[in-house]
Image (cartoon, rainbow, N blue to C red; front, top):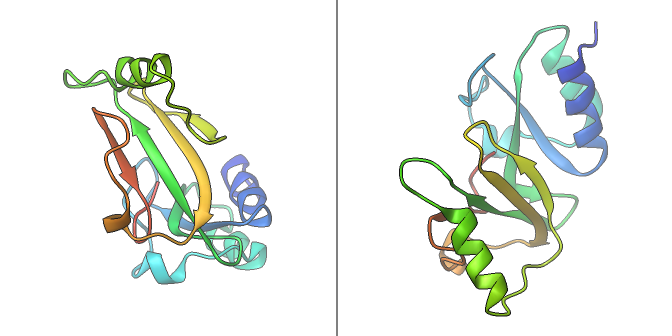
Length: 139
């Protein structure tokens, strides 16, 4: 039986995102070795959900065939104002690449773009009060 979450997980997989199930109401993976088991195969994704209400995990290690996801996590919690830091950079002429944007529960944002596979060591701090996630991480 498909649920809204399982339908969305399958749609993400069909669009190149490597998906894995997380525990319901949590960001904790519901499977072991998620960085290696995350998949864009809709049949596997559908079987993982199989009517359950797992949250959706997205691996940043893989996207499509030879890319990974780079995510700028713009925090606005615990005294962090990533939104203002990002605005300041934009006013100074810094242009982010085209991104897919997702709101976070704390009021922040994830700015997501796909690039040839990177390691975390290759990323620099783009935006103060933000974190960047790449190979080996998750959303």
